[in-house]
Length: 319
Image (cartoon, rainbow, N blue to C red):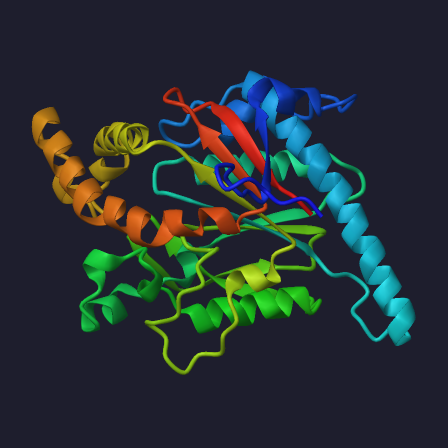
């Protein structure tokens, strides 16, 4: 058996340049219209129809093949066990990455693209924001400035949700988070009803460290994923994206008096940039470096974005 030369890096991934990935589309048709893509964009996230055609279409083809293979595996398991397993087990996709990398828009577009396939038309999406502790709990634990860090999530509740979904429970409720209020909405829930595919999007969905949750079983959210994706970009590009988004929010959402961040609505542009930079560098960048990016190599697919936010390179984990 040959050995890997000491000078050659060891990798679990096969790397694709953008052009190589696009070629894997094969004969898969374009799944969305330009009007649909525009409607799915987030604030300051200008994903294009070309990006959908060159990146999302091949990805939807790959995932369509994976869903079929996993369903075949479940059928084999049912046959072996005499059919005690649930008749329908959702395929779960985890989407991780930094604040301002475009996870929300990516997840919405991916959901719409996957739902165009006749084999799995029912695709649902949840974000782990709903599993953050309410602000009152974060305040009691002095964690408001660590919101989004692993310790700010009700991990047990998230694990219970994912376990029920994977067990084929018909109706599973997830808490609802309001970005306007910057808090959990008391009494509101999103119900997931046995979809073909469930996309779970969040900063720390690939996290394994449990030093903040002593006594909790060593189960992780990613244990329930069939496929996971990590979106990445350089620190400078992420910072610029965050500041650009902060300025757009100052002009829009922050103007609402009900907004938790209404106090930033009347900042001058210079003041807003300074405030945005402080939040990014003191909170989000620290979380990215300490908690989020270290989970990158746990993903099945890593998608690296360039300065213009388009995907330039993809790394697919070898089976």
